[in-house]
Amino acid sequence: MITNQKNKLAISMAVIFTLTAIVLGYIALGALAAFLFTFGYLGGLIIWLFVSAKVQFKQIAWPYFITLVLFMAHKYEERTMDFFPALSEITGRPVPEITSPPAIMLLVLAAVWLAIPFLIVKKYDIGYFLAWTFFASMGITELAHFVLPLLTHKPYGYFPGMYSVAVLAPVAWWGMWSLSNKETKI
Image (cartoon, rainbow, N blue to C red; front, side, top):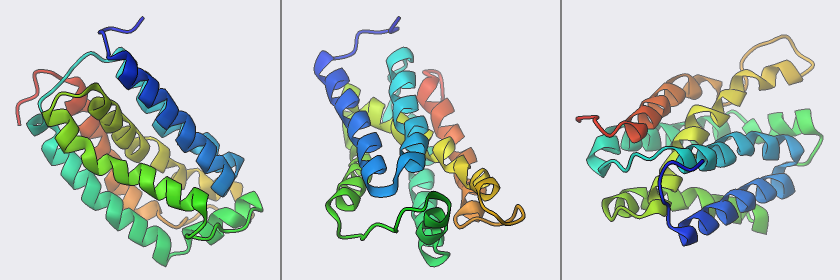
């Protein structure tokens, strides 16, 4: 049972956003990526539906901005260490062109996370949903970097993006904790 009344339009938008991210992940990167996206996007949706706290943005500001900076560092590590070619070796799917429509749409979906501060300051339900997907994606989905080496034909070792996730995920957990705790004082 949903613990608080959420705006029906926000719920509809959240479901569409979630399904879009998972479908685009499948189109651009294949079934494995779509499966992994499910943890962040569907996981964020489910948590948002059942957690009633509507915190002030100042309560999540530090974890949000630190997670955002660490996410950018993580994307840099992935790009410079050839994450997508390594993923392609596992999935057998070619690396998508950055200019392909599904890749561009995935970037746009991620860019929507930049609206979280404004939306939460305004107490919009969709802002809380986006915050949950952001923190769940960074704190849960990104942990796949520690599982992906198990899917290669090499001994367990570094997988592109793994180092930055070791710092990124715990900060995102802090964000999830802060987002769920009405009594948090920052």
